[in-house]
Image (cartoon, rainbow, N blue to C red; front, side, top):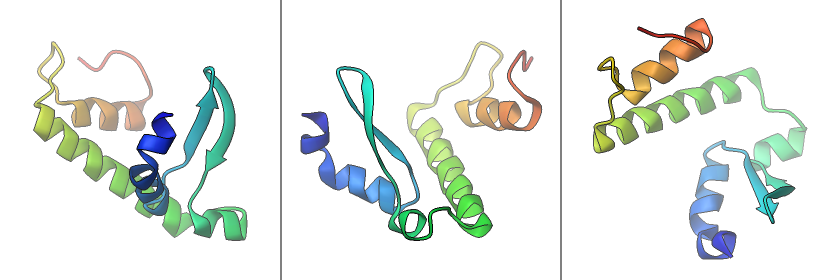
Length: 92
């Protein structure tokens, strides 16, 4: 039902390069992928880099909107970037 209510938003995310897993009863049912990925089977390196840049920009904007900080004073974006670059674990 949520997919039906948010179909436009979901399609916008897929067009921006996101892969969306569709679930039913908390079980994966299907994946919505960008057309370019489906047409070629795999995204190009540039498409993957662009998708990553867009995702980080969206996370940064979300963090600013939510003004989220962890106990160490890091923003959500800083934590995610640090974990991406250094692996999961203590970031303090």
